[in-house]
Image (tube, rainbow, N blue to C red):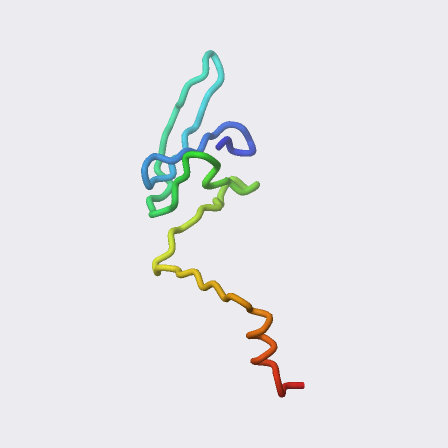
Length: 89
């Protein structure tokens, strides 16, 4: 991801978020690299999995859930709702 000011590039390297400073003259080159932080964030290969905020100091990333989630399917939910609401104003 390019910084909004265009002189830095942010990229993921494993669990790390790295900032690279780039120069364009006399040729495109990386002048410095530094690890901003190391954390367990989800990585996706088919779409963007993080973004840099307009201030170039904050990032939006997705953390994995610590607990397992479960899906509950309620069949005939209208009837169940009507039965639960019976007698309530």
